Image 1 (tube, chains in turn purple, cyan):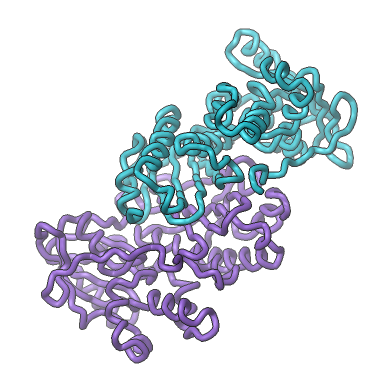
Image 2: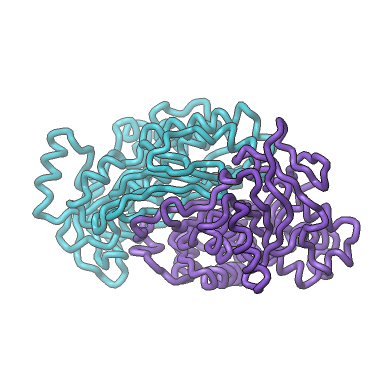
Length: 320
Length: 320
């Protein structure tokens, strides 16, 4: 395996644009010009082989998924993502130039799409693990938090739900060979809703990204906002392909499957009409799925009138 | 193993002070109030079990080493460390409450000493890996880079060299049982030279932290500054304990052992007297070890008049 210095300079040094980077990869640390009057937004996520992606995933798929998953957290804050660092732990036998080129190509593709600069990192030998720390900016008091939902607010989700879990099921059952192209793309190249996060900035009362499962993540909003929620399963946005191919599982996956990387947000009633207009005009891909109600003792969510616990997905779904 | 949410809120949420943190752990991302007119400094480092620390290391030792190693990079920039995120990958069978309490105690000790705020993180199941991203601040144009050394500059190192390699040798040979207390402390609780970095800010022409080995890291300065260096092995600061116990290895370890986390810096001649006065007065623990000379073709370092290649330490010294 090449030395750390060679790896970084060869595969990662000039990978991305360097907007507002005073000093990039190559010194002890990077120097960044932040924007005054903005707050810095920081999110960290790790992906471990066999847990967050299957061993059959290729290097480019791993890279795009890792960066998109992190971007989703920044999107949920209503922030503009700008810079990231990469800690790549990789088994020496995996670290071929072919693998590293594909991995850096995946990173570069997503970085270009979202105008991100890779500013630093570390490569070490060990079991395949990718940790990314993403930095972004948001105007002071502009961030979308989990804690702002109020009784009477409408609850929306972006895109469709359940695709992450369906993709996972197909990949686990079929390996990489017979997975729907759409689902494979949703899994390895999820679309972090950065633009929608920015659009919702002065409107949404609360926002979270759906990574653990819709109910679990809505549960986080309820807990942080000290409210409860009423949801209608009929209103859940589920892709026709999913409904057709998985008539029994699709609703369960939409409710608690996780890995969707859509946004769940709440809107004060007086602002709903504005967002509804955007949705009707095709300017926003989102669906109203319920309402915020007063908290009970257990912060349980009412699904079609029945209380459900916010089932928290196990996070070792690939491991034995 | 407890769920990710429980782990973070139980062991990491209120671990540190929250200076300039607008929103800490518990939402999709953290919000930080940066200082206008300062540049943001970002460094990332990963530690993998069996590579960067031996399997016999306890949780508190792993935590203090991980944070100190990262702080050393910020120190080498002449920056003030402020915030950090933690990506902890841990085998379920290791993640006992006892282990996690000891680990968070180690983090808290170092965080308190350097006034750092833990602002976010991620815990995942997998082989033990700790990735820390440290954020700091430095005045615009105040950072100490590797690239500023000029012909005629004096070369200094802080503290003593070779202790990291000696500690490694003792730990590898003897396990945790018969290692010198001083060396064990140097290995698991290295002292990042943050205060010296700040003190050198408007003086040093170049600076780097000694993690890969003195010659290798001085080589990085030479390469970035397009110069060469002349070093005298007689002048290398080596602790008396090391000279006595390892008469044959101590100089080699000081030159290329690595893991010392001291600073190597260069000073323009006209500023040397100021630093020499500090050293004489006991205000600065540093030693002059050589001079910067004009570059030759190979950027080789002259050691006692003989060219040496800047041996780069293998970084898998614990594996196999």
